Length: 340
Ligand SMILES: NC(=O)c1ccc[n+]([C@@H]2O[C@H](COP(=O)([O-])OP(=O)(O)OC[C@H]3O[C@@H](n4cnc5c(N)ncnc54)[C@H](OP(=O)(O)O)[C@@H]3O)[C@@H](O)[C@H]2O)c1
Image 1: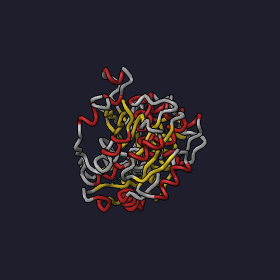
Image 2 (image 1 turned 90 degrees about the horizontal axis):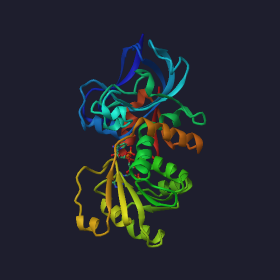
Image 3 (image 1 turned 60 degrees about the vertical axis):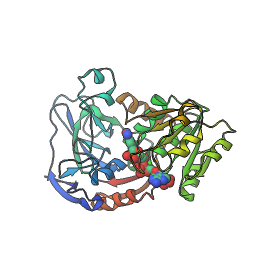
Image 4 (image 1 turned 180 degrees about the vertical axis):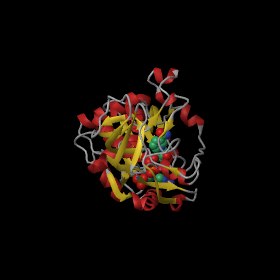
């Protein structure tokens, strides 16, 4: 039996993706095979098509996937054939001090699905049984697939790294992104007050519809943030855009506020005026993805608050290259999803 896969065969962006076939994988001890219903794109996938970072080719990308277990290996009793699951997008060694302490993000052997191992953009994938979690029953398959990487990253950034609490003012820069929309819904569920920014008026309206208290253009927004917060400034700004917006993000903060960041879509280098930071006791806090415990906590929040990740568009696997081009163009609101 052969399964269809979306293969990366070069580093020239979405046009380096093509449909291929590989032998059906078989689960070994402790593993299960998942037949995907839906998979979702992250900006990481787009960066890899440009060689940032490079992977040995041909490669199968994709960190997000949801589907049905259709085979289990020896010794697996936590998951059974027919279970509907969503995948924690990280595989770790489980033996090092970090793994033993529940700090999987610091495991030296941490492998992100699709970046360090073959990923979810294929019909079937064999994975360790313990990264499979029951999918939230109130979500469609498309919405389920939209959760893993972006929502895990958002949960850890806001609550573990940022320690944000009900009533705090939070600014989300570039609300069209997957991490930003996850932050919006999680933050509202936890009682935070949210100001979203976007370059696009329709996306600003979508943010208000999803519960943002205010929505501003992504240029020169700091003055308006100070006004909306009654002169307090924000407790935190999530800025994953980088140099294009960072200065305004810093100016939006109140005293002892913090910039929370996990990415830099507009470029990796910043010019930072340090006095602007220390005179107001500001912090710059970074993060990457999240621990297994945080993935469970994120799923608990999604279930208990009945949250629904916004899905922008669904493409068949055979049109994977078009899905990548759509995400790269930046017109999306929420997640771009593939169907298996
Ligand atoms: N470290 C981690 O664990 C981790 C995890 C997830 C993501 N990331 C990184 O975080 C970043 C965000 O990823 P994502 O998938 O959520 O979203 P994304 O696809 O990168 O989109 C982010 C949003 O940023 C805004 N934006 C982009 N370029 C801009 C510019 N020049 N000026 C102003 N706004 C701009 C746009 O918002 P509007 O369209 O609303 O204007 C866009 O929708 C990426 O760089 C990604 O690689 C890191």
